[in-house]
Length: 565
Image (cartoon, rainbow, N blue to C red; front, side, top):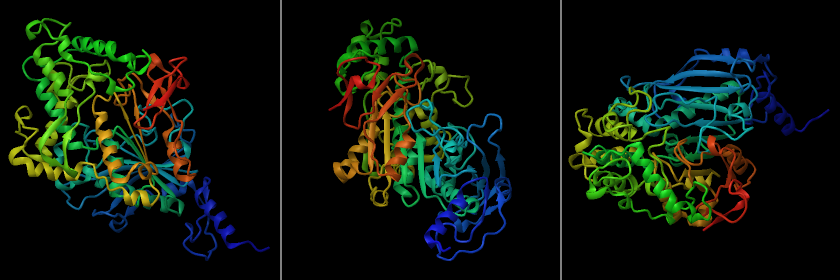
């Protein structure tokens, strides 16, 4: 019986990528019309074990390295304790630098025994320093909790991968930034290097490369997702960038500016005072969107004046009011940083935080400004739980180690509007780190799709930062062309993973995958609140500039709202 060659090749390709026992076939991947007789079948355990000690040549990696090596390859049984991802090969390794005084890039690649042909690259956060949990959920929603019933990418059959971005440490340890190669890796080169190594491993394991590659990350990982689309468009078909730190260096300058106000004499705001401020904001603005539901759905409608909470004479007189120094802290947070120089891509204005429209900087879960003025200057990595201030530690490390390369620099006297003699170096670092390019043409032309999303109550990265980026893209491409490859969503009450009024989740990976593989563009999406006090309530996920306006019915049900301009 004769078979069409294409049918034979298709069936052999399935043999290459599915099942626990694989047949290795010459030409798997479709590069030739000739078919060679299969060699002896190998089990998943044998193929995983064969990766132990494997070396990846530098020639297989698209940026300069000294190659990569595999430290361990372990088959994780589907029945292993705590494993909900099915059988997979856990590969740990390192990518060696060209400059051997630079740290390695340590990575994990998880290769499922039953593969769907695709990959998900997990983003990191902060200053990285650890490998993301690639067996878990990526930041596809605005919280680390997924909607009920959703499986992790690995459990769905995706190869999952991630790295520490090129140094070992914690999210607030920036000493590695003094090394040029380590700085470049953190700034974005680790994205390409880790992708290429994982692609090599996939071809080694399955005989074919990724059919589709996705990048999913939040915060610093969201910036990395934008880096993937902007700088390495040939490698990625889809990106989910959640509350991305796109203007990373400018963001750190804004944080430093806020810290200077907060740590000035009398400027620190206690949790008790903050609760008075938040209650006053919500009392004035909660119902402006049509429903008193604990959410300010359209912050642009809210115009709260903190001076209404001024203590008599501007002198601190207790927890029911704000002193002049504390009002200055609030106003610093609520206003943009305007610089005398250009960050990357001509940016001179770093946006303000929505502190006067619902953002909570003093909730019980996280304290970006620290628990007290004394604790704020303690490194969060070494401080007791809940102490320390990321707003202090993050700019402190970037200024001292990435820019000045002088650990004696005093953050409290640094001029964030005009760094003086350090201006040129600041520009150089911004050009390395920031993911603000509006040139997405290569990504768009290959069919790439991007989901950009941000919470309106983000207490680390202003939602306006993503709005500004979207508007710059809109100016470059126009609405029709931009909508063909990018969808932008703002979530009212959504914070930086947790600590907001609405911890939104939806199965964004499926949405992205359907858009890319089936041509089904996202529409009529619903997002679910995972915040314990209000868990289960839903809202429409409105495409910007629309926002969810209450119409009628149960305020906990998405159908009671309409996406409105």
